[in-house]
Amino acid sequence: MISFEHVFKRYPERGEALSDLSFEMESGEMAFLTGHSGAGKSTLLRLIGLLERPTRGQVIVNGRNLGALPRRKIPYHRREVGMIFQDHRLLPDRSVFDNVALPLVVAGLGHKEIGRRVRAALDQVGLLSRERATPVALSGGEQQRVGIARAVVGRPPLVLADEPTGNLDPDLSREIFGLFERFHQVGVTLLIATHDLGLVMSMPYRTITLADGRLANDSRTW
Ligand code: ADP
Ligand code: ADP
Image (cartoon, rainbow, N blue to C red):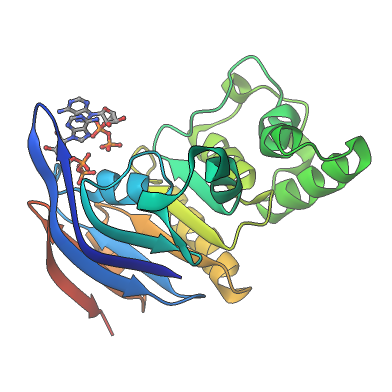
């Protein structure tokens, strides 16, 4: 599902964020991505989501060579990749429903289908009763669950999360990781960047570790 072959990413003013990175992920795998701040985790996720292009090397996702993908095909790729951010990036003046519906509205789905899918996604994250609330009325954990509902509402085969529990306490973090496990159980491929080593070690999944833009370790904890 994901293949990095000798990937380099250089930001003009900062030098190399990723250096000669190669790894693969199978469809249906769930993996954690760890490493110090600045190790290149966000950059790696942004390459997969095609928010950035590699400077050198090949990034292949869902059979697409992203470095060579024509600009007009980027929206098709983005629809197949759900992205979750630490700061959840919700629209503060829109309802929970509207926030989650956004990717489906952009994709041009019909009114009824949007309603059906948004409620299914909200139900999955346990927020069906809050669809009319605005994000400011929600707790941090609830806001992140809305971000997760928005990422999965289009049923993407691949979900990326960048420090999804960075602002949450341990109980809420465990709850969010539990949601990810549920998606894993229904076949979604997940790659989750996190500093939360305690949680990572307590769960039986592959862990990919970066250090200074290079692959430092790739293992299963159990
Ligand atoms: P992590 O997510 O592991 O903290 P990042 O991928 O955010 O690491 O950053 C890797 C390196 O690339 C850091 O040195 C960071 O400052 C740099 N970097 C990240 N994004 C940009 C950018 N848009 N422009 C310039 N440098 C960047
Ligand atoms: P995170 O830890 O979630 O990756 P960062 O603080 O690293 O967040 O980055 C937030 C934003 O700032 C990202 O869009 C990233 O591209 C950008 N960024 C990070 N480092 C740099 C940098 N050295 N120069 C310019 N932009 C950067």
